Image 1: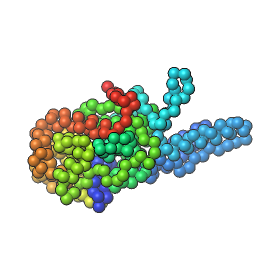
Image 2 (image 1 turned 120 degrees about the horizontal axis):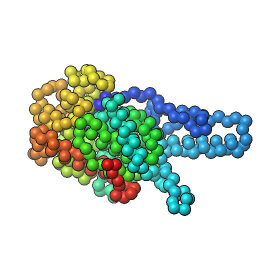
Image 3 (image 1 turned 90 degrees about the vertical axis):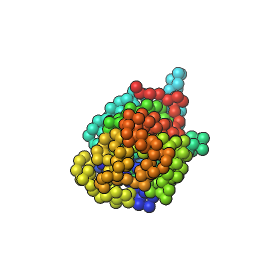
Image 4 (image 1 turned 90 degrees about the horizontal axis):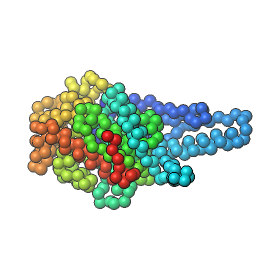
Length: 371
């Protein structure tokens, strides 16, 4: 299930899940079979495509060949849906990126809820949304150079960043939903899954906005090193450097840290945590790792209470966790949230919504809600 994944050298803060890596399959056009492997990059590459021809007419063969060509082109783009919308005259209007459909987003949300009920993948979906948005740089104005919630995390070059280790599993989980709802962008799907996971785990209702546009290729992926490190030399300075770059403040840093109420760390992957504890030896998903909280699939304010008290050696406290009760400015909010879950939920919901919008380009420009 959920765990902290990163290289032992960079040790990035993260939320992640351990899930099955079995390949995905998809039926091709013309009732033939086109298989693609999702083992290493389920949303980018087709390993093989079969569209056999017969002794049919030349025009029929050409039609099939053209369909196969379009099919392959779409998958080579990383399954981005390049929408062809029609204008009032009925002519196809070229679109650079897909635009999400409200009704399809609502249906996708129901499928995500069912996925959560059956796989308990809440932590990895929270992490997926965070990591797609958390590369934003407020000092860069142009989209998509500024990073942020633009769906770029679906491409191999970004998935290979140390901080994103294991997130391919989140993509494998969401890919059937993406294929079912072609009118949903990856940028929206990642943020929808993240917010839904928080809510389904018992967290607050998050005031989300949708309509994010996807980047179209891996050339738009951010450089590595944009996300927080779990064990920097100066945790408070490091957190401020990273989050201030995104335009977030001390209250939002502490509130977002509270999402560590979900998930576990695995030492063989991140260099942090114990191999197993009394809280992780059993339960849903693969056993093992060390959680921040006793009930690591429940979203509440126990993270703040546990970090403050530090009475249980089976619960994880990273340097970037401990600092929220050591730094005077952070401590004001950490103490507040430890004693008032309603206050935490209110501030977390606003901070999560703000994070999910960072760097995004919306169509329509004002975005739209689902409720």
